[in-house]
Image: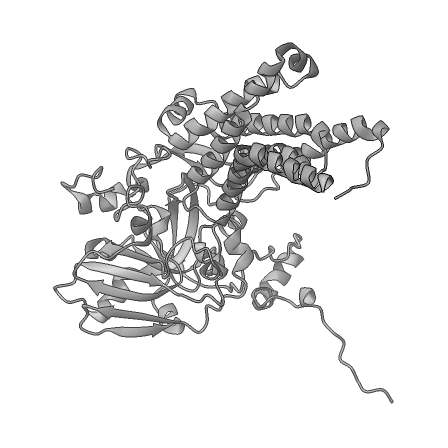
Amino acid sequence: MPPYRPIAIPGSEITPESVYFRRRELLRLGAAGGLALAAPSFAFGATELAARPGGYDPDEQVTPEADATSYNNFYEFGTGKADPAAHSGEFQPRPWTLTVDGLAGKPAEFDLDQLLAFELEERIYRMRCVEGWSMVIPWIGFPLAALLDRVEPLGSARYVAFETVVRPEEMPGQRGVFQPLPWPYVEGLRLDEALSPLTILSLGMYGKTLPNQNGAPVRLVVPWKYGFKGIKSIVRITLTEDQPVTTWNRSAPSEYGFYANVNPEVDHPRWSQATENRIGGGGFFGSNDRPTLMFNGYGDEVADLYAGMDLKANF
Amino acid sequence: MVLPALPRRYHAASIWALYALGLVPAVWTFYLGATGQLIGNPVKIFEHLLGIWALRFLILTLAIAPLRDLAGINWVRYRRALGLLAFWYVAMHFLTYMVLDKRLAFDVIVEDITKRWFITIGMAALVMLIPLALTSNSWSIRRLGTGWGKLHRLIYAVAAAGALHFCLAVKVVGPEQLIYAGLVAVLIGWRLVRHRFMQRRRARRLAEVGS
């Protein structure tokens, strides 16, 4: 008698967990007529993530998820826009430890479950890349201020430094002869910028955990600044007294400043920042050009942070 | 190195095939973009594709002469097609930038060309290519005589400008830019040493025959 061999189930036939958990809802939907199964997932390892509405919605058309998860700058996975989605499959965002240290009364380490235990909100923000394109993205996260409160910043703390993970074995952009940037990728904010209610640590987007190409498992979102300030896959946050070094500023100081506030009046040396191309499906004519707004349209909330400052000199 | 020679009666057909094949990347990508199948930033994807193929055809154009000198393969009959394909790709690259990317906002385009170095350099390459494309016919070659060769040395400046334009356009110069710039540098460099190299080789061969 031949030994029993279980029937091989191809991966394509395995029901994704996200669909499984929604099976009753899907049955209801199916019964209601429109049997539209879950949309294809564009993201590596992203799972459903619940959040309450956070009250931020620019009332503009949200960028299709397919665009937001396939047109990315994440040089740790390659310099091409499609590289992060194509080459981040090996990356393991779990388990994760985020260390918060420096000038803090109670420096601490947070694992992913501790981060997910913060009160998560969904906030729809504009995202303006320094390269002249933009998106509208529904982030899930919580104010960075809530995290910093836990570690009790000392009075001497004036800046916040951020650092991305270094894992050459999982991040192809970090290995090989040519390294586009020195690693780790580092970013920074002034403490008052970091404490702004607009500044969030994001753990998800489009109702799911962050896909690897968008900075899993935890990234920064600072909607009034150019996208490169939104450092991804953060492993360390340090409160400092001095202004921290930031990757792009060190790489090309004449092109990328520490502040990097979205400003239509200060051009990048090689292109204008007056307008932006809104990414959004539908081929050559689906996207559209629109004027770039001062502070990316968040001036009411953040302009006071820069009162009296020369924004041309401090670009 | 000896390749099986293409029978003469297929020469003309092979040149037309090259034109047709050469336009495939542009046509195919335009189709994908126009039908919404390019995800992310379709205009930039198309624009950059046209630019990179322009550079590729420039490099292939410059490679024909050294291929004959060093490998003995004579593909000079394909050089006009390669050069004209380079011109068409540069023209489409500019047209895409002007129409699809900048949507004919002429003030913005003029500002780009006059203020931004990498665009100025790219524009210069396009302008230099125009007389070359216009004289890429047998009538012009006969008509211009030795002047034709002198005029067409502009291709070196065009290729150098194209490679520079590519390097200056990106945020970080990486292996891709260096490979293209390196190929252009080697192909132009060959022209500088070619005369001396060929003379030495001829002398060596004469000596071998004599001994």
